[in-house]
Each structure stands twice: as structure tokens, then as C-alpha cells.
Amino acid sequence: RSGFRPSNGWNPYNPLTHSEGGVMAYKITEECIACGACVPECPAQCIAEGDPIYTIDASKCTDCAACAGVCPTASCVPA
Image 1 (cartoon, rainbow, N blue to C red):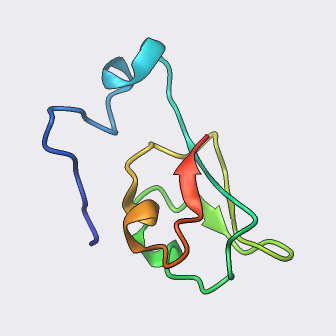
Image 2 (cartoon, helix red, strand yellow):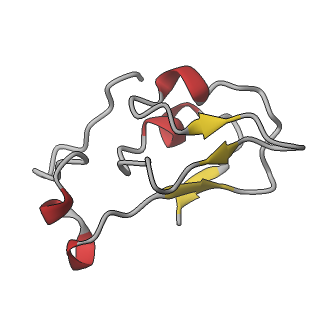
């Protein structure tokens, strides 16, 4: 699902379309199995391998939800 975009007019690259006018981010929960499926899907390249699970750099995350669309354990969730 590379390039996943909601169809409601929301633009992940425009902070003005985010709630409260601020940039939101996704996080990876402890359910992560460290499969790495999310890494190549992230257009902002903000996902890195951590110990023991992957992590998302919130300062780079554009809230596009591409990671959530490919995660087999639904571990990528809004922060």
C-alpha cells in the first residue's frame, strides 16, 4: 500500500489539515514483531530498528499512515 492516502481531503504533508493545527505522529506499540514491513513504506524515512521493536521519529513523521497499512500486528497507531 505504498502511497496510501485517505480520501477525505486530509493532506499528511500540510500541517494545516491536522487536528489542532499541529503535526501529529504515529508510534509503534509493544505488539511490534520487528518484521520491518513498515520501513520501506515510510515516505519520511522516520522508522528505525530499535531494541527490541522498531521506533518512529515523531519529529519527522508526517502522519501519513503508510506504516499502519502494512503492519501485520496493527502496531503502528496514532500517537
